[in-house]
Length: 493
Image (cartoon, helix red, strand yellow):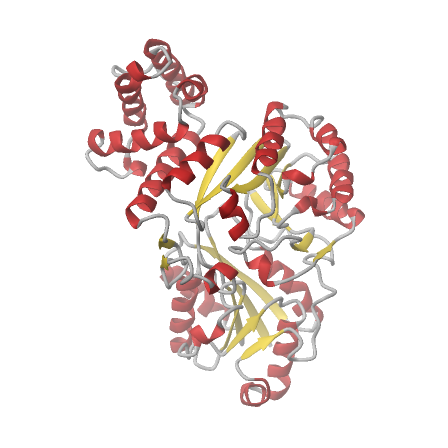
């Protein structure tokens, strides 16, 4: 019996970790298992053809909010072409509120929760007894334990490194050293489960050494652990080991900065520049907001510790805010933005999504949420913030992404931003300026020379009310252009 594990990644630089976790368990159960991995950038017809050409008996779809629509469309068409094939959907997008899929006849089975034991058990039952018998006894939705399985002993990748040389090459590989989260944030699916299971320090380092075999292909190993440093002694041991020259890649961790101790800061300060990336969740500085979403943190301490990491000068630190949280109106979000802006290397603005299975989704009426009923379930408005205001924040996010993420304006922004008063007002004002100057053109469609020209004109327009020297600012802008574009800056910059 042949099983195709199907993935649709966000871009060509990504890989899917889930299908690689499932493959060794299916192979151990005696199944011929193939990975069919594509990107959302691939044409639907190309992906469908790849699935069809595998002629598999079972197709298992790894489903997330970013690929749910495409996965369902592919499975529906595949069923039309191969009605005898069995389709199984799993992943966080289908694990909760499964009644949403009652009318989706192209889904033969839905796996709810972890799949390392459940999927092989289901496939074995289908091989031995057939679809009708399994459906009659267990139904269409299969959860951990329904088939006599128990996932509690599984941690992703206990068998060792999950990537193989035959896998699609990508600069970014995902890795999981722990599963679960010690916190219960009301907007996160981790709140639907309890407890944390983790690999040993020795197993984690053994796996990371295996990534060195991918030299020239893998550039970044991104830990998908919800809170890598939940056990600070374990985290410190792993970080200490990564100081060794035998580990040559860049490692990205999502951490709770409040858990760092003095030993952590000392270890992290010794890394060469660029070897470690840290992502910190702040989400808001509004105490009422943090209480409503069960984030029991001190925003001041998070900001202070993040700034300390950034000031070391050797680590890229990303700090996250979420727009649309309870009790957060436009002014509250502005206060959070301004308070956090200078703490990290880069401030990241995200938008609240009411994921099935989360507390905020359950309590959406209480907070007056209006949100998309299809993935990615983005909030459109709440009691505190209007649709128009959230759309304005989306515009701020897009402009920041263009001007900050590229690195092409770093010198200019490093000079200007400490002298503008409110960082939020600066970016919000720039959005309004671009609407007129760029004649409504989408920010991604603006050419690079025009992006510099618009920044130059905006700085000129606000200079009288700010504390920066416009001529000096434009000189930084010209230098940024020449460094980025490797040619002399044109007139108007």
